[in-house]
Amino acid sequence: MGTQEDADLVRRGYEAFGAGDMDTLRSLFEEDAVWHLGGSGGLSGDKQGRDAVLAYFGELFTRSDGTIRVDLDNLIGGEKSHRWLPDVLTAFSVAVRSARVFCRRQHRVMPWQMR
Image (cartoon, rainbow, N blue to C red; front, side, top):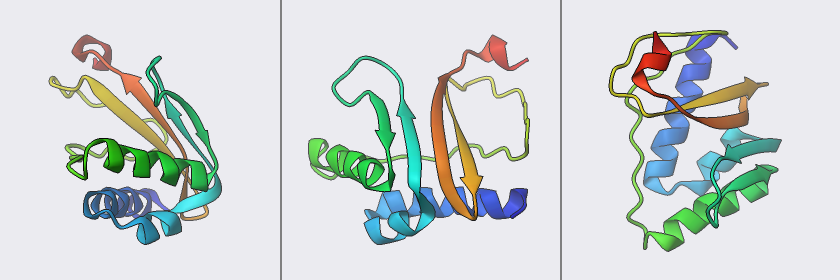
């Protein structure tokens, strides 16, 4: 897969999450996917495996009474992509393997770090 196909996969994932479509989300993740979630809150920590990632998503829907919403503002592809985005405070990196999401990390990014 190339950069465009990887980007399309991430977009489909955001759309599926927004629709609560767990079947599509299941199809987009590798069985051994890892979802890294920083911080020290009750939901923080690594989610190991597709089932654990999907259970985490389910918990987000449950805790928000189904009102959780995610917006994909910018998607930058490639091995190492850097672009100045002055309003970014949180960024995510997604690794794709065999046309499925394998790893996701959250990064706290301050605007001056993007230069």
